[in-house]
Length: 269
Image (cartoon, rainbow, N blue to C red):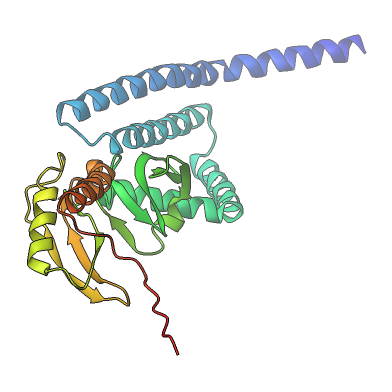
């Protein structure tokens, strides 16, 4: 038994000595390779800062380049030890296929995230309508887009769902039309009411200088419904919306224009 033990120990020692140069070489490849990867990603980050790369795309590119370079370093270390790189790559491909089948939906969201970052249908800070959800874009993550709704709720939309239908970017043109309605009594003169509303809108602080639309929208049962359409930036939409109504109500009251309301007439027999 002692002889067999010493023979086994000697055989193991010989094997280690035989493989020592390859193991040391692989370790050196990993250490130097990862150092180079860190150096390259730092240079890439500085270069993207210098060229003013988009803030949404920069972290994604940095991570992607770092992962790819590290995979190459690991493959190089495997080759130094003597592992067949082709077999190793085939093993990785098989594992990737199995994981991809299990995470098919998740990978679809990842691919959609890449498309959003590349083609930029919307950016961080934009006011958007994604599948009926309206809000400002807080983050464009790898798998999800995070919105803050107009009533200050956090909405998380998977990127695959966000891009699977119509995407409306309300900030893309730099301004929004604010849709208001004002009820005018039938007995009032339209041009008189139009001037009162126009003067009221002129007092709205954050309204854009674009000429607002003030027209008759329809004849309702008890009043004439007017379409009042000033313009604002996406950020000031609600400020313009609420202040416009306040100023119009104040102006109509000061002019003695009564608010329309339903009147029921009863015939005496």
